[in-house]
Length: 317
Image (cartoon, rainbow, N blue to C red; front, side, top):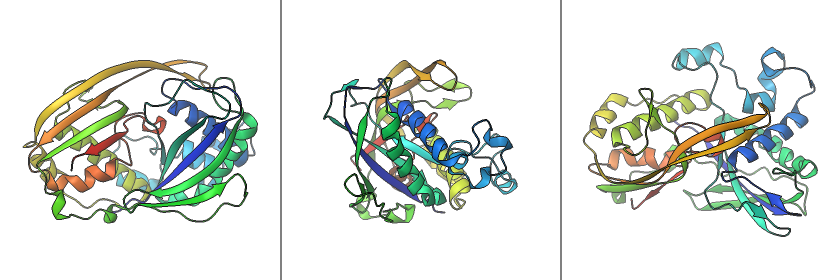
């Protein structure tokens, strides 16, 4: 099994006062979608579902990916559409207002074969300089973009505003990059959830008691589904892992529940958002799970991951 993950780090500079909400991932996602549609779609009045070009259209493939017959055979019947092949990687350190000259950064992670559309992603953000960003459609400068691979310590600049050329370099992450080293045989591990995380089990949201088995069940479901859609199917025995996960103890928890609203331009209304942030620690024979935990840091967990929710960091492993 393998699923390529390509990380692009965007550095922007405000050219006037720029306003962002508390959790700006939805703002970034909405702006990206509008601009990508403008440069990809020739039909203003058509929906993706009825378009004959949807199978090769970057906008459709990123924002409205449809299940093929092959996809339906590979995945659970609970999916009516494919999961979107990207996420915004944000944290809780954004300001609500950026003055002219101040800079902000975010990352977009692109999954599997969708990395072939990276030039469209970059061109959409170049075009957004003409449209504006945030509640006031504020002007900004796209200073540069970097392709990053944290696992190998690689970082390459692929775009700079002084040079219009986009360099065809990507430092893609694969799960095979993560080797089972002796240092992984650790009996304690901590997860720090940086952005609100929404996990639903048996019809109820997890608010303050994230058992390791529930964490791994959520993780395996997301990883296996994304791999089936955009990479290669996983060939591991989930039940064996989940039985082992039952023996891992929840050692410490400090989770806080968050409620807020995001505004949807498409629906023209406020939408309620929820999720927990904070830290959890586990103790037990964790070594077999560590490669998947390390890798899942680049996927995010739970619902609304496209907006940057479910962003976590693995500590002390």
